[in-house]
Image 1 (tube, rainbow, N blue to C red):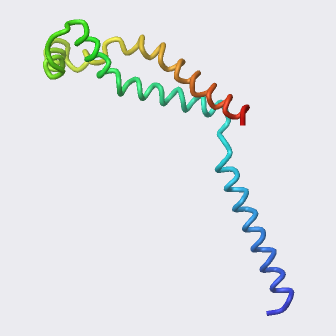
Image 2 (spheres, rainbow, N blue to C red):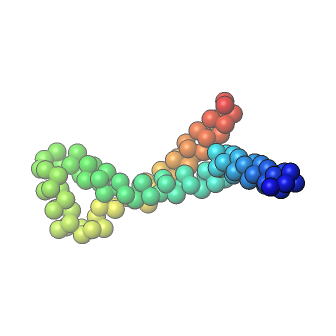
Image 3 (cartoon, helix red, strand yellow):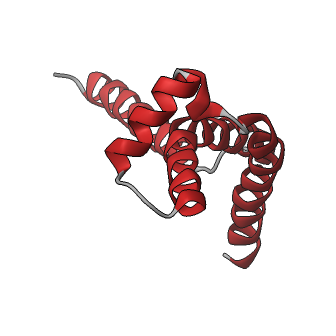
Length: 115
């Protein structure tokens, strides 16, 4: 191969390497804070919806202070249906989602500031 062909291959190789480094740098860069805010809001909402039935059972067991978990679940299903497990979800969401969003977003912001 001629010197010119080797030089062209070397340019192409270096261009690809620098492009890979640029893509890796972008992958390592943290997302903007508005994306963090949206993601933390959604994760707070999902976790609240997923865990609320457990909190409801726990609260009902503390209020009655008798019976087992299975008894509490069976009584709730019998008296209130599946919706009974989500009683109070609105109030918990109104408080929990903004709190989670604020917590995670401020954590990310301080982490970036402090290094």
